[in-house]
Length: 370
Image (cartoon, rainbow, N blue to C red):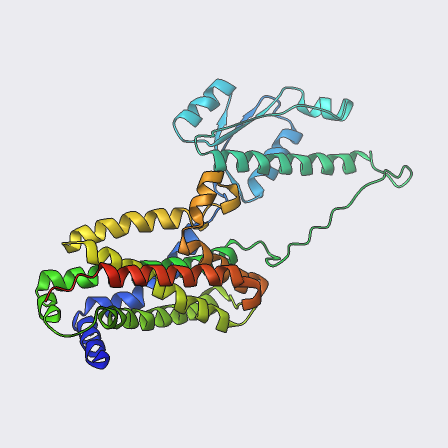
């Protein structure tokens, strides 16, 4: 009996020419475009300079800031008020005001104050731009000290050299952290949305009435609905591995077998959740809106963009009921740390629990009318 139900499901999937194309193109487009766009490294910051000194030092400082690659000089204002107008018109993101006698005070006293004013409507961009500027100005001051001979071989000044060691991501490449998490998002979108539209689609097409008059048990019916998406999940994650390797050169530090194990369990869980929504929905439009609502909440609370430890405590508690959180942790642990199954037993137990609950709910909520 299960063989005929599976044959029906695969024929329905393949009969729709759009779905097979989407299964292939969706992970390709997401993994090729999103990692380049979703990048927390800030660059191309619009800079406005107010230079009251017009000296060689002020010109050198401006050149050093622009040549860093983070800033582009879009405005040179005669006064601070004019620079603020550039900020209000979105022509500048940050203002650097160089005071009068900048060069003279540096040479005479070795100490001078600069003012940095940042547009913090976007707090992340404003904070990072200020930090970048502070680091560049400190480097400029260090260069001047060496030129002025304040640090000489005759008078040795004790210094502490800090040599950072970045574990698991030595080059601080944001894509290494982002791409494995995007694989989870792609799996969720495909293996969550498609099951959510499956049963309700048959309701609208009228084929569900024919299934209801057959002696097919509810468990067998739900199992036949799940297995095709299980196979789709394996195809999608394998394709994602290939893109990560070919485009970004990402190879997991650990073995792929733990990832496949967790993906198989996760696909059962998220597909079961989609079938639950499909059981309770009367139209495809209703199922789409309900699933979209849950998917957005699950993605925002998964740790994809915001670290879970940085969330408020109540939000951290909510993430415990989010299956995306656990698979995202697994992907990053295997890709960056090379963790094995023994290191991820809490995630394994959580995903098995989600799979049992959602699929049991899907079986119980399917109302078979004879």
